[in-house]
Image (cartoon, rainbow, N blue to C red; front, side):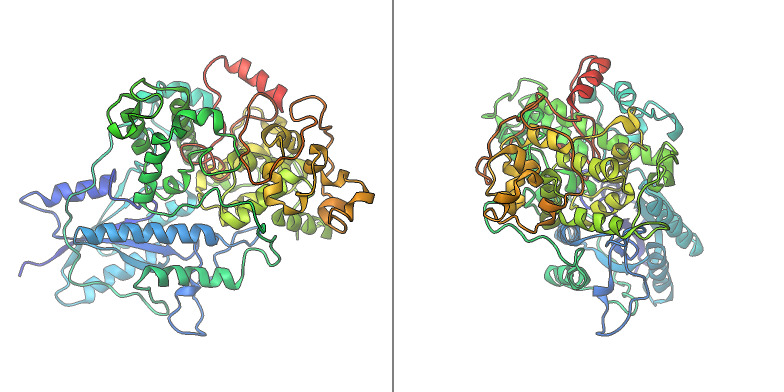
Length: 621
């Protein structure tokens, strides 16, 4: 029998078969007469430093050899329950796809370099196991991800195994087509970068088909090392991921889920099939066409694309979105023939989606340029001038810890902020517009360490993306690559009036507000008179009696939203963007179109004079 030559493909955030250059190449090579390998072993490792793995312990009472996967400053879970579930769904989806081609997916737990070294060692020690001819993986930009790549390379070299690092092709513009050669040449201002790669409609490369076949798994399958075991069903996998997160929930005293009238704006499941189906729905229903006008909405599933969670894990790619938009614009897909704008070229909505996808690219390239500075308190700007408040730090008062706790639980007394924080906790999602305001409130109004906000979003967001999240928090905090720097401060009262003029979003998630009608009181409930608080059920509430900040803004004065009355809390709250609020690119977690915001980007401004847009934006804030 011919000795097996095995290729190990380590998957991380490339959880798809279609438009995946690695699987495409594996299929192509497998069709050659002289094949470099006979078998393929796809591998996914739950990285113990990023995902809590104590639920995988095989024996009750045993202890994990790894510390809990918690953040540096706030000690939050690195991966909270919403993203853990979406991740599990995405992993199981790609596993099922591989099994459909006669292959499969080896799931393991630990540190990536150590796991690969152990697998290579098991192959070497086993009789008739064949040999591992190569280890492949896709390049990522984060500091931890770069460390993983070095450790996997080192493990491969230790066993004399070839190692190859592939370009990450899930982004809009291919690295090979960038107009500069070194990371330091990336412009520090997004507009300059955008101009260097326009026209955006012509920029992406073509997508790659899913492989019709793959070589089989090797006959020898390496074992998971003690003390962990890996479940053999999806239900069990989800259960072991959730077990430690439920035992020690992100908040010990969370806000209650509203009793009625609201549902998640992100009720989606992980995996390529779900992501591609979402793209089809967005185009077919006209959401893509109307995106530029609806992207600042707050309630419902279709005011923005919400593709960012699939993009973050590589279940789909930016160029797959672009390719399907082209089919719609050029009249090449009959499924969309009844949709307004079919066959009429690019429109304002589809252009805005491409613009947002480019923001995701820019965030990732900024991480490549600045490296570890993505996680430094002084940011890309290396700005040490601000004395950020951090609970538990030297000289920090107990009030600072209380401020953070109330911020996390959504009882700040600023209803727009509180609604967003409660929505985030319960659903793993909040809109890009809300993310920008939350970040500005924590960093600029409260003066709190912005890294606490970035870590909380890392924990809670389903669509968390390392570059988009951390880069956007820097941006709003004034230490990132925003040309306006610390001058960008959002007024969440005015923003609430502008983007939630009837208070529907705030009343949906902050149920205590549902008895209020006046906008002045909805957005600033501390303005409810003491005489009326008891009748409205507001007596004794911290958010009413002790707001963390009283922001000077008179509803009914300059700007929109004046005199508005509270509408039905369960209805639609679409943005009418003609005033109010910093429209600059926010950095949240990915709520915007095309794939993220604070997980990816911020608002599309369209074309025209950059200077004019800047002046217009200053007038709105």
